[in-house]
Image 1 (cartoon, helix red, strand yellow):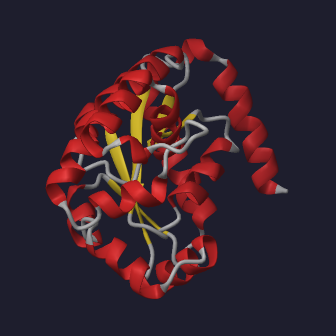
Image 2: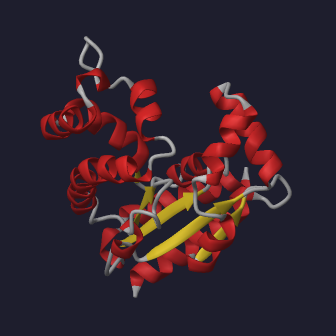
Length: 220
């Protein structure tokens, strides 16, 4: 009941746009299975706009003509199915464990994605802050365009179990994907804030604390 009342008070506060002097750009990142999306869904309860970069990238890969053309040019026509949608399993096999090809893929997808985010942020400028959720925030250096970064962490075993349940993947495949990502230690060293999604620390309390902080920062 207290959390519901708090959310209602937050919504009333957000409607008073005049009290905010700026709109902060917040980034949320973390390793696979850390619970980034879960954290973002809670922020959404406070009417904060969320840009899901990984979801948008998947959309652009199928809808952006320049991206489609460049991917076919660099990785072959087999990268797209007859229905025009990306053949994800094929492309994954091509770039997995091949850093050069992965760099090419990123160089094709990320510039249009960054531009899409830039336009999105402008459209949300009346909010005290917005959030960009992305798995590869430090790796792509997109964090440089953001004001503050939150890293979501969770114990390795917990992350593995979450991914196994969510993706129905093999444990070996999950571990390989984890190995290709920046370690939590390195992410935390670069982060402004850390949210512990370990089942022991209350997510809602951690998020409310950050929400209040960002609101105050937007006023000054």
